[in-house]
Length: 275
Image (cartoon, rainbow, N blue to C red; front, side, top):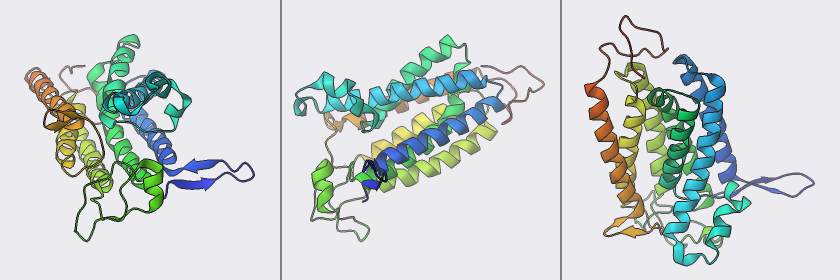
């Protein structure tokens, strides 16, 4: 755990590892999405605005779901949601995904971007950002796992308890690292899927389904408060919904897919391709 990366000389202002990794995730993710989108013939300027808007929607969505799941823990909910602290703190990833998705749908309509191809361009970036973000979680000590006797269990220092309430004096499952490793593998897999995709939307739907399955499983080892919907954690409940939505649209799109696959460079095939 290393919550503070360094302090700015002379100003003594801390630069937090979590925030630095989140910023890196956004810069790399946006750069990659612009390259993939341009390869599909999408407008670079519109893609840039799309990415910025989706990021802001994700920040608000992540914080909103955190406030909802921790409703009884916060006295001033609206101040917490709308404060500038939003820009440097975390939230619930699935809330961020849904918030970013809502804004992205609106922006795609506004800029007349083909939704499924645009979403495909950003899907690998979402997985890359998730992996870097979970490394940030590990550095901050949040999103901890249940106690374990396994040799790979992690015992966090006292500062973690003071910082985010992490249990100390006991080995915990490093669920942050589990999810980070899985996210990086998912990132590489999505790049491979994109090269061989049979229809627009296949990449983002693969991400939705596989991330939903990943989060559903990892939640069994998580031990921080995330709220509950019956016997399921809030994240498990939303993950199941994400998987079902992905399956629905996958079946629907695959039935109406073009006869020719889309090339990774966005070149036209001999047959018309869909949007």
